[in-house]
Structures are given as structure tokens and as C-alpha cells.
Length: 489
Image 1 (cartoon, rainbow, N blue to C red):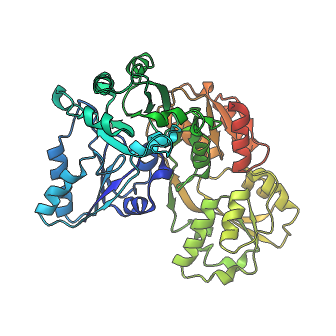
Image 2: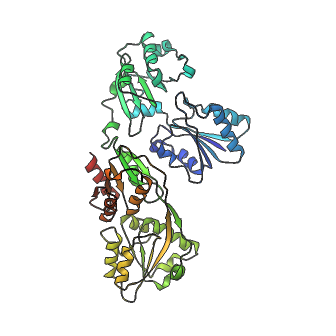
Image 3: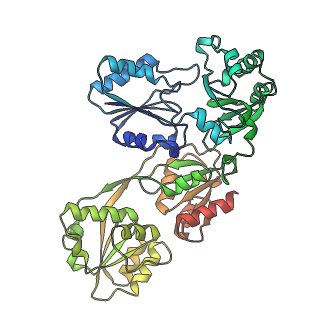
């Protein structure tokens, strides 16, 4: 099976629900240059990723070879997603890619995407149609093949009127504007270019058909960009909602502590941030513990307290109960303690209300709180990361509290290098996120990066790497974002 999926103009939120589902089901994803990193991050880890990205005048993988690659992968029995920027059928050559599949009777489907012709205009505050200005829309390719001349009927376009949207036309902008004027269009007709539409580094320039090519050159406009010509461009300023995002264009590093979607990343992008993500460590559940901890889950009845220090720990612990066929009702006698609101939220999502969570989200505060509640006859089970901080266990040991420190998972760190140039701030939700950041940018001078942290413990780790650190007022994602806004606006 092959699915042509339109990835839209770049912003992850503009990918369709069906497109996201097909990406998640893929065995092989063959993608283009204009598919954003946000969307590429949704590709399953198990899937083979093949970059066939093309730039203007530079086709490292010819179209015929791409067609053959799609066919070969499908013939091998893989579920193939051909991921294309924008919409597959709006100058995306999707039809050409289906020709070969049809010839060889390979089943396929098409998931349309939001074309940049419409999204770019909308994110520039330009409605492509408007009852007072334009009753028709014309989408034209401005791409010149092999340095040839544009094959555009300017006379017909100018005669019909309406909004003209030229895609892939930056290199030919001078010829496009001249063609419109020579066909009788008023040189004062409003016009605009939207570069990197819908992304945090989007730029918009406004002019007229007579001045647009000069303005584009002065502003060094480059592909990808969409050219819009028509009276609707007059509405660009009053309808410009995107440029009002409070953190538009600000570069923020987000080092993720756990896999899955990141609400911090998503919310910062909603505010206009260019988020540079440091991929999280891979979580590896440990199916067996060593020594006295080996039967911790099976002998859960001997404990009076269960301590969980992360939302990941909640998920892993409960899955291990299921794997060992242990009924969750065997936990009924336990009192449960956790660290941080996110861990508590995860517990509550599973119908478990913790008995204790310290106001400060760190192991030291948790340990001192437990000292006031754990009796001399109690035994504590700590279910956490194999490399969890020693502060919690050291305090309990010094107070002669009986406990088992059960390593239920470990982290396998991704050391892929990340380009952090231009980023002044990094947001961290845990100490491990700081360490992951330091690993991935080991060759960079991170002392120039200011750390925005949840909690003093995380800030302390950031300072140990030479970074100035700022701490959110509360240990929540919302409070962390407020601190980002305070420092960056």
C-alpha cells in the first residue's frame, strides 16, 4: 500500500488528522525538502526514512528514480508513505508518482494537504478571495524548467482578474511581474511575497507589481516563498494576525526529558517560537531487577509506601504490573508519594490519587517529607530510573528508613548533534533534560545559553554546565512558559 500524504505548508497543526495517522502506520517514509522537522519527528522510530529532497536546480534524486523507489518499496510489502510538502496534486508531481503504481496495480490512496497557495496567504493576513476585491483565485507555477521561459498566458490572467498566486516563482519574479504589466495590469496593483509561510521565520514583504521584484531583491527573499498579486493584498496589514504572536521568530532550545509529544514545545510554537528540539533519551524498561529488588513487584504486599519520581515511571510501573499479571488491586494497601505535578497528573489519569507530593519538585524535598510520615515498621519501594539522583535514597538511608530502590527503566541517550546557533535561551523541565542537552551540543559553548528551568534542582545542574539559570515561579509548564515570555519579550 502506498499513501501520498500532503504535509501542508510546514506547521504541524496544519497536517490533517488522517495524514498524521498514516505517518504513524508507515514502514517506509519517503519525504521531500519542504516537510518540516516538526512533522518528520512524527515518523515512527521503526520506520525507514528516505530523504529525496529537491531544491530549485538541484535534484539529488531524479523524479523517475523517486517513482521507482516508491514502487520497489511497495512491491517488497512495505506500507509506504510518500510525504510531500503542501498538497501532492498542487504542483507536487503526485500524479506522476501514481502513474507507475497504477501501471503495476499497486494499491494507493491520496491524503490531501493544505496548499501553501492558500495557507501562505492566510498567514500573511491575505484572504485569497473577498467579495469586495476578488471573486476568483488562480494558482500558477512560477517554476522554470531547464532555464527555459515561463509558459504563462498573462493576457488571460489579467483579463479574468481575481487573485493570482504564483508558487515556486522567486527565481522568476522579475519575469512574472513584467509579464503581468505587459499584459495590461496596472503597475500599482498590490502584491506580496510570503517566505517560509506558517513557520516561525516567516517573512512578508508588500509592494506593487511594479516594485515587488526590487523589494524582494533588497530583502534577499529566497525559496520557499509564494507570490500573491491582487487587490486582496490591501488587507494584509489589517488582517495580519500571525506577526502579532508574542514570541515570533525567537529561537528557544527545548531539551525533552521524555518521549512522546511535548506540550512545552507545542505551546511555545503556538506563541511563534522557533523551537530547536533536543530529542529525548529512549526509555528502556527493565524487565528484571537485581538482588533484593528482583521480586519487588511480585512481593508488593511487603511494602507500605510506593514512591514514583516521574510520569515515565508511572507508565512503566503499571505496564510491568500488567506484564507480570499482577492485579492493580494488590496496590490497595499502599500509600503513594510522587514528585512534581506532571507525575501526579499521570497517576490521576490512571485513577490513582497520590497521598503525598512535596511543594518542591525534587527528590530531596520528597525525602524530607517522607521522613515525617513513614513509620519505623514501614517499608518503602522506590520505582524509578536506574540512574536516579542519590539524594532521595541517601536521606532515607541516613534516617534508617527501610526501602528498596527498584530500577524499573533506564535511559538510552541520543547523541545526535544539534545546531543551536542563534538561540539565546533553553527551556528545561528536568535535570536529565539539561544533561541530554549538554551531551548533544558537547562541542558548543553552552555558557552563552541562558537556562529557563522548572525548579532549583534543574537550575543547579544548568549552572554546573556554566549557564545562567532562571527558575519558573511554579513547577508547571504554564509557569515555565510565563518565564520564557518574561525574559524574551
